[in-house]
Image (tube, rainbow, N blue to C red; front, side):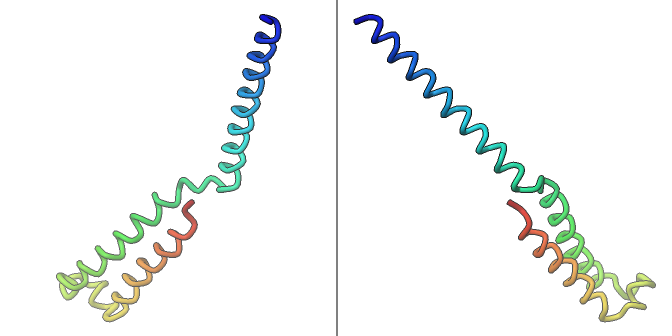
Length: 94
């Protein structure tokens, strides 16, 4: 009887090890499929903030900043374009 119990425990340990290895393999595969997109939030957050900051600065001090006053209403397009670009980058994040 003790031998069969030892065999059952050994079989359980082996099965648990196989499940553990399979889980590690799935995690590794998931990381590879994501394409290493850890950089995405580090790009889209500053891009969105830059767009908002551009809009705020243009509305508050656009007339006093020479290149912004030269751009005129294109400042609105630049700021909205930066925000839209950040939204497109958000779709890449997994």
